[in-house]
Length: 420
Ligand code: EPZ
Image (cartoon, rainbow, N blue to C red; front, side, top):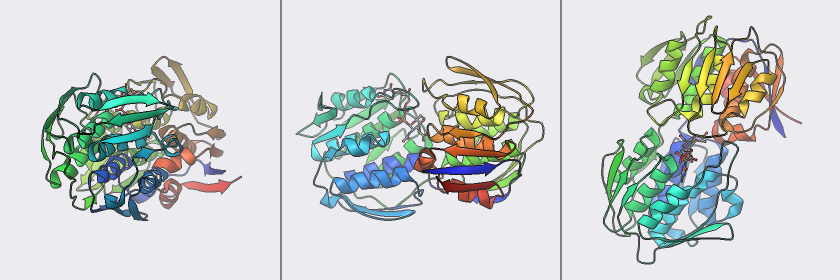
């Protein structure tokens, strides 16, 4: 199994190019199911989750040509509506095929994803939305079986809780439904905006993109013809490199970023004492040798993202005072705490709140990755820990970071991928 060996203590310098956003590419790949013509996707990140979803599209009968950052997908050949356990159990985001399969074919079977390392992550809100649109849903043998033989009907969907995936599934379902769908309490993430833009460019009438109320006029089961899509920059990958500069007190430039999408992270790092120069799609961050402590609460966009919580916790271990981090979205997203403590951090956890006390130095150790973002936090800590840190189980990292060790090496970090 591969692991990363990091020798800490090196400053970073130079530039790094940010890849396309995994969490935008995934719903966009699922949305291609709404078309029976070829769709070209560009700037895909070269990560395992993208390959997994493209594999699922292939298993459903779609035709996929994929070459690192570009995929040509033609779902005119799609002849199955069953998303099997083998794929869905590897990647929860496979649930995103539910809405488009049901909308286009009037039926589908999708394996239930189950819980995962960061929490229970139910899909009740996705299912309630499909039911409101007239689908009959049955859960049997570990599968969600959904049917709407005469197509889905537009409806008013009020989400009790803001859900990114639930909003995406509903948007895709609504695009081919009969009549108008209104989503109340919709998610506002940039990934949702890109999905709305893709649907709008294909002629679907959408009002309220980027707001909490989105109104979609469906085509009545008429498949869409998509224009080429260029995936937006990955705001979480960008935030992770900002944290790499902050924790090592370095100056680096991120290229191909959307600064607006990472305002929450920039704001917190500014409070911690880092400074920024923004020039179009380039952002330069200057670290500081006296990082202030941080206080943050994870919440929905445009608030501070849960996907940056672990990385900020790693940075906070190097601050000059006590930091407090509250996780409000996922009940179990603190698996990195005990591993950071193995590196010499002093983090105290109570319920959904972590207090991070300052320590003079982290010390290299063997640590284990537990989920995608927790893994990147361990890599960040390894960059400043004295001696050698081996981060194991890095298959989590490979799911969502495009060439992390290659990009960090190019910035001067001492990091290598080894096999045991
Ligand atoms: C998306 O997950 C992202 N994944 C996650 O990124 C991210 O952490 C999360 O949004 C929050 O920003 C993708 O975009 C592929 P939610 P998603 O539905 O859509 C609860 C990463 O590291 N909920 O917005 O699954 C849920 O349990 C990943 O890249 C229900 O209760 O998240 C959570 O507490 C990890 N019922 C909250 O809502 C439902 O039916 C928000 O989840 C659905 C969700």
